[in-house]
Length: 117
Image (cartoon, rainbow, N blue to C red; front, side, top):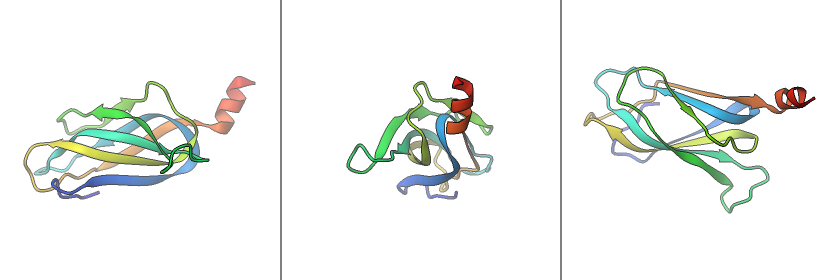
């Protein structure tokens, strides 16, 4: 994802499977670009409990490093298939604030069912 640092930066992703998200990994390996600093993570509720359906999972702070950064979710929310990242601030003063990698980790409903059996 390639965004201007001054723009409103958000990303909505539909996951391959419905999961209970417990970790998110972000990275930026692009040189001559600014690094994301603070971001908020939301999941889409189904059925929606709020007017817009987004559940606020938390605000996270990244380091100013060019490597994979893992963000553990303290209290994983309900199962979801859609997540939203909203980038609040960034390090540096470059024109672009790209996101090179995004990985979302969690457990599926079937994995939890088998684990609880």
